[in-house]
Image 1: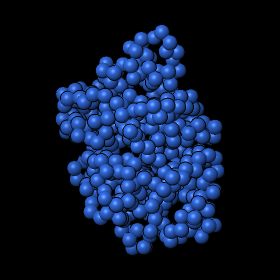
Image 2: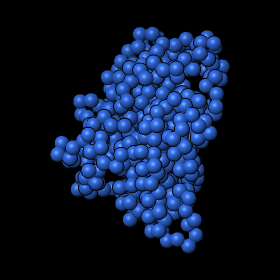
Image 3: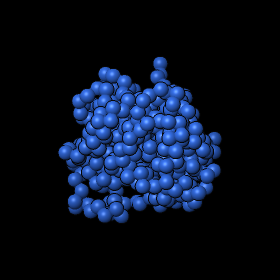
Image 4: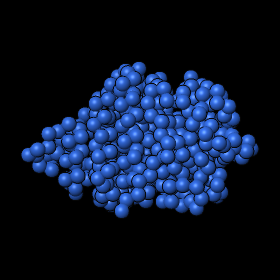
Length: 383
C-alpha cells in the first residue's frame, strides 16, 4: 500500500495569483501571518499577492525576516508575531525558505516546543495551523510537500522534518511571479528540482505513480530550464518549469529523496550556500555511485533525458544519464568545484559534515548507505 500526500487545492498557471482572494476568503479564517523574506517584501512580487487579498478583505500581518537558509531564530520570531497578532492561519510567499519557515511556525503554533523536537519523521501530534503556500521559484516544491528544513544555528545542522501535519491546505504556482528571478537563482532552483525528480526515481521507495511523475518532471526540466535561465521573461519556459516542480514535488513527497540531499543539507548549514547549487554539484557524484548498485533504475532516467533506451544496456543508460546531468548543469552555469564558491579544502571539515550527512533524514531513501569514509571521499570530489 502507498500513501499519497498533496494539498487539497492547487492553483496552477499564468495569472492564478489574481484569483486567490476568493479561495482564501472561502477558508473562513480571521487573520493571516504572511511569511516571506526581505527580498520579496522589497520587490513588486509582494504587492501582486497582497492586492487580491486586500480586494477580498483578507486581514494579514507581514513577517519578512526569513533567511535564505531559515533558522530556528526565524521561526521563533515569526511565531511571536503570529501570537502577538492573534493570527489563525498562515500565508507563505516565496521559494523554499519562506515555505519551510512557515511550515515550522505552523507546527509550533499548535504543538508547542522547539524546532528541534520535530526533526525526523512525523514527530508532531497535532495538525499545524493552516497554510496557504504561494510559491515564487521553480525549484523546491516546498509548497506542496510534507518536507521542510530548518537550520539549527548552534549545531550548524540543517534539520529535515517530514511531517504530514505540515501539509499546506492550498498551493499557488503562478509563473508570472517568477519572471523577475535572476538567472543564477533560476538555475539553482531548477537543478534542485532535477535532483528531486532523479532521486525520487531511483530510490527504492519509488512506485508506479511516482515514477511517471518523476519522468515527466525530468523531461520538462531538460527542455525548459536552459530557456528560463537564458531569458527570464520566457513565460512558456517559466510555466513549463512550474509544471515540472509540481510533478516532481508530488513524486518525492511520496517516494522520498536520497543522499544528494543528505550531503547538500550539510553544505548549506555550515557554509550557507544555495541549496540548489549544492544539490547540482553533488548529483552526478552520488548518482554515479548509485548506478553501480542499481543500474536498472537509470533506464527511466536516461529515457526521460532523451535517450532511446531500446537495445541499450543498463550501464549505457546510466552513463548517458550522468553525462546529461553534467551537461545540463554546465549549460545553466552551476559551479563545478567548491573553490569557485570561495571555500578552501584546508578549511573544510570533511568528518563533521560526513557524520551529519549519514544521519540526515534523507539518507535512508538512497539505494545504498555510504560509509563515513565513502562520504568523505564524495565531498573531496568537490575540490
